[in-house]
Image (cartoon, rainbow, N blue to C red; front, top):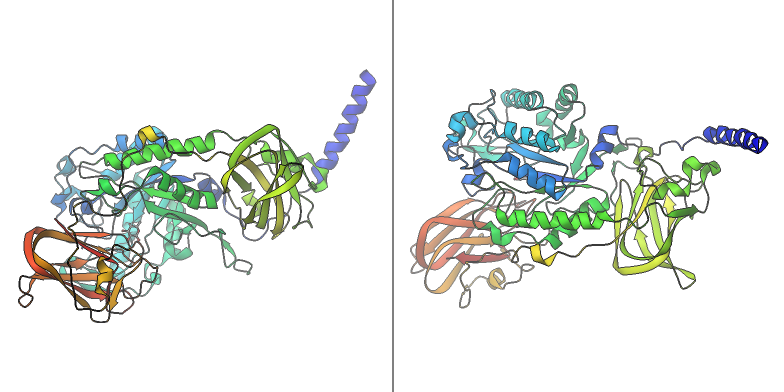
Length: 616
Ligand code: FUL
């Protein structure tokens, strides 16, 4: 007996000696920094837009709003952060300064800040309260600091860059660890600029000298993820403000060239259809938990991170309708991730690198994101890894992860299930994996064997996890009431007339059609004298921004010949986020004729409207 033990010890010692000689594959292409790896594992977190716009019903402040307007009655950072924590979020990012330039912390860089507000008698600091609450509840904290500043007299000139740098320094030295700093890409345009009230265009993003800013941030907080910054940072915009990224999703820019660089994607969107800031009446426009779950699948489920905006309202808390949707979304996400049927299941593979346990198939079901299965070096196509369950189970989501520290490799894969003695292809459209991909089947499938066949890869694949999950349905009892995007108090549009060709497309109830004209105005005969107190404008929805009205003037008339102005202004942010715009007049008015004038359009062109409504 003793002899057997000695022989086995010597033999296995030899074996593991040999095994340890089997080297891990070389990284393939650009690889993420540890900062980026940690960040990708955070998956999803909140965005909080809260500032002067919350009190003016605007998306972009002009920069001359009275600081006294900022006066939340009952700001409660802890309640907000607790709600994020309960939903399973890992962090929050706060808009410390939006394009209006109003700073929500007592900065020394500009007078235009929260000390001028009556809130907490001018002694308030929103950044501090959110940072503290995050620390208390174990969430990470980040800041959004708009480069565009419509208040600063020096904006567009070298003087502003000093102001901006000082703001960065303050935020990164006074509030503890900042996990991410967000530099918005919306830049330059008209604004207050210290009273100049003019349009200031900057000469591209070069104006901010981002390489310098990145160096500064790295010196102050080396672990801080830098969003945007003209691709000088760690993470870039997901490409839409609707919370999805394209699939395949590559964390690489300049892929396959000597300048290949790892930059991850962050998808951003807001929990309702009302905008980034809170707006009166937005409760009816909250997205349903099912829609938000889809957003999660189209962002996190494609290998990006998701930042979901849940704005604070005028009291300084989350709107109850948003909160209800967030809560149910959190429950649905938890339900999705709560049971991995593949965890600790047996696994085998077409081949294993050096036959080493370090690279064994079982690594894909051990629940450890760092261990991985890997075939021989030369095998980039046609290899497979299989999961064998003790009993058949029903699932409809397959989650895969790559060991991204060795680069993002897999370019194509298919998934097969063992059914009636054959391998049946259940998904043939896998085109990227990265940190994770969640492939949802059109219907649940029952099987006890699943395999992933790698059909193309940049180098031998290194798969760290295979999970089999069940997609959740909304718990009906807690799902909030919600209505489709729109506005509850819109007036009927029957009987509207216009002599302009195609005008009726602006009120045909079909969001996909639109009126567009080089004449930049549209006169509508409402058919009778009508009382209304505002209007809504839906920008065209076909993704082509050319000709999209972004500044307007509206006029009204009782007889169609003498006109008076009802409102003018900006449809803020329609380029990136072409959602319904709600414009309210200071007081209700009566008119029979309504004239919409597009005073400027994106990328030239006249004016356009997908849908127009008058509101009671
Ligand atoms: C955009 C901004 O213009 C919006 O107002 C919002 O802050 C969004 C997150 O980024 O570019």
